[in-house]
Image 1 (cartoon, rainbow, N blue to C red):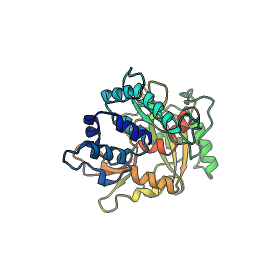
Image 2 (spheres, one colour; image 1 turned 90 degrees about the vertical axis):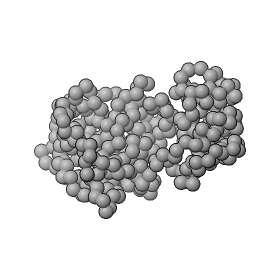
Image 3 (cartoon, one colour; image 1 turned 30 degrees about the horizontal axis):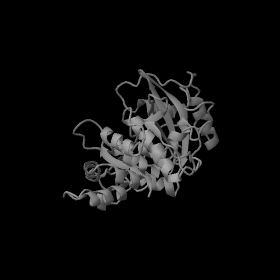
Image 4 (cartoon, rainbow, N blue to C red; image 1 turned 135 degrees about the vertical axis):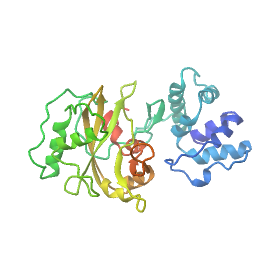
Length: 318
């Protein structure tokens, strides 16, 4: 019996029924057959649906539970039922992880420990892309440095990444009303002009994208918005896949009315990234209310699964 099954067997029937009736959001990797049926389930049916939905995803189940449900589970597992929901989630995950490994200590590669972001448990996958080194984790806000953009577009990937190194710490200035101003300025620091076409920005090989990040109360970095990937038409909404074949993500943090580049992350496409992109890419209106144009966006959960959050917060230090 894994931790999800164990907790589902301990919480009261009303809690099991509530969890079983929760809507399955579009970014969850679960079968569509697990969508609520609309009828009242008996307790065993509800428990089976909860276990089928979350399986080995203890974090997902704990994130879906209310404070009262978490406290009841903690009491049943003889865990102190004190503190707010985030603290209870951490305590219950630790207890569940202990039950699953039966007291045997294992490394983070076998049982990665989640971190708290926005009050919820998030498992940060290890970095799968390139990133600059850091002397401390989470990465500190870099000291302000002067802009040193190359005189011409970089000739090689090494030159492009060297320009990205020099961009770390550059203040981008007030954004103004143009939501894309910081992204355009960041690309210019690399000597690349965003052309707004279907192929990647740098020589048709590397797409340059900024991703907005902010510090949580505990000091870790979190992605705070779904970044836009491309404008789309009504016929081929997934054409933006081409833009993600190789992406240089510039992690951008706001500083009052200014912003700066905290780090960069070069991510190459492979089968796992393709699977994640398919799950997390979504289309929604882009522009002012009642706009008839649509954009493709990448849900911020992608960056936990693709390793960017670990490159900012330190995977072995989670």
